[in-house]
Amino acid sequence: MHDVGALLTGHFLLASGRHSDRYIEKFALLRWPRRVEEMCRELLARLPWRGIDAVVGPTTGGILLAFECARQLGIQAAYAEREHEGSSRRVIRRGTRFSPGTRVLVVDDVLTTGGSLRETLRAVGEHPVEIVGVAVLIDRSTESIDLGVPPVALLRLDIANWPPDRCPLCQQGLPLVKPGTTALPGHASS
Image (cartoon, rainbow, N blue to C red; front, top):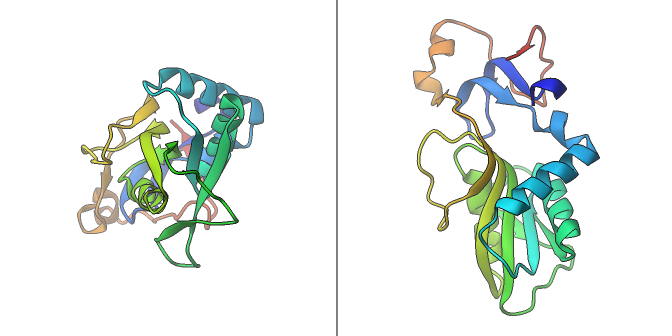
């Protein structure tokens, strides 16, 4: 992660609404197809589940991982997209169909609070499938997250995050950056 500039330091607004002093810029990793191929191979090797029929990932980074994991397994990939702009509700669409009893693995890039994974699991659960497990590239959660099955992670990072009203960086008056929408001046890899 360090060699591609994926771990940034500063004061960041996470997708969950929480704040953190470190941010994982997943696209610094995901823009390298061979790296993604290697990471997915390593992640799949750690899975305790067999007989997977489909891999589902949430937009945006989860789509790339679902595709690559499914490619390596020789099975179907599917994607959980936001129902509409601004919605947290995810749906499986674009003509995707699952046969009854399809065994599904849900994958995502970074686990912090589990919000996108919960929504993806809910969307998959609306189909006649069996969800066998959850896998993530990076688990940066700071609390135990109940997803119905313990997630398998390629990498576990202990990165603090806070609700905005308890953020020590806000209390210090440091400027808040929303990655993906704001330039990241002066950031440094850590």
